[in-house]
Length: 104
Image (cartoon, rainbow, N blue to C red; front, side, top):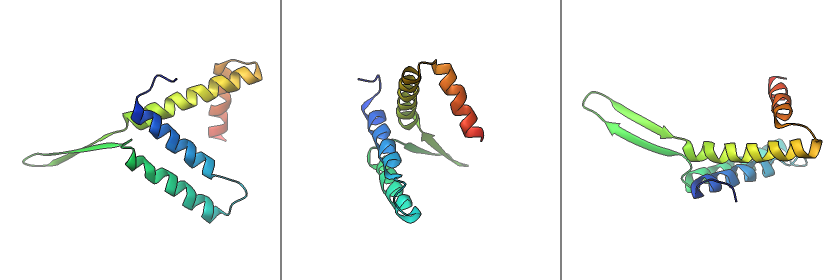
C-alpha cells in the first residue's frame, strides 16, 4: 500500500474516476459532465481544506491542498515507475518525455 493518508488516497481515487470518465466514445458534453461529477467528490472527501481568519482589517483565506497534491504525487510516481519498467527505461527518461508532451 502507498505511503499516503486516507484523505489523500480518496482524493487520488476521485482523480482516477475523473480520468476514467474521459472515454473517447462519449460526446464532449458527456465527458465534461462525467468529469465534473467525479471531481465534485473532492469536496465530499475533504481533499481541499479551507480556513478563514477574520482580522480587524482584513480577512485571510487559507487553502490547504496537501491531501489533493499528495494523492496526485503518489499516483503519478507509481505510473511513471510502472511505465519506465514496462519500457525498460529509467524514470528520468519517462519524466523527460512527459515534460516534452506537456510542452507540445
